Length: 267
Image (tube, rainbow, N blue to C red; front, side):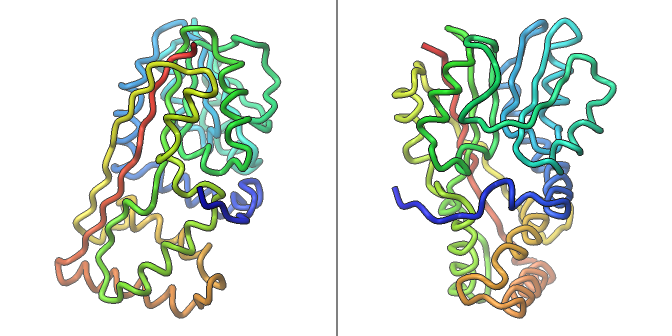
């Protein structure tokens, strides 16, 4: 797999980016994705759950509702701004706790959790196989895990300048060390100690330029990262935004992206 010298996840999620991500996670697209993913994981009342890379705490909150006050949910993240958002969101849920930690070395006993969930997390981890072994350690035998990751080469995004569109997405791929992780994640999970690995797709489809959609929300995040990298200027990014708006006005906006969902059982 091709890897990149990517900025650390901790450095990428400053206050502004964290707020932008929080807004994207509250779009109807991502709300629907979160509901589908949680239905696949099927949390049960009383279970102990681990939300890895909890971000602004939206999934943590949803997990807490499903496991109830007799259960427990721990959200972990490496970015302080994300943890601040998550703590505020879940402050009235006594079954929820948060901790800043590196997922290569989590401060939990072996077999601590019944279920674990991570969305758009492991693609950020350089030592990914080590991190999956650590995940297997903290999940009990027979416990369930669900991981969501994206290969942005599955993205179809209409543009009047396909070369610029490709360049923007190629530059965005450099923000993580494993941009094509879904292609090898099943095998990596099996090597780490998981069985019964199932793979599903949750697509995101946007047919209009609408600020409440995932793709338009992500344009801010992608553009902020890409400007000044790989020869892309801020003017290039502004032109990309303007072009997307123009396709929307012409009823020609089109965006499609696959989320790959991996479910497995701890061996």
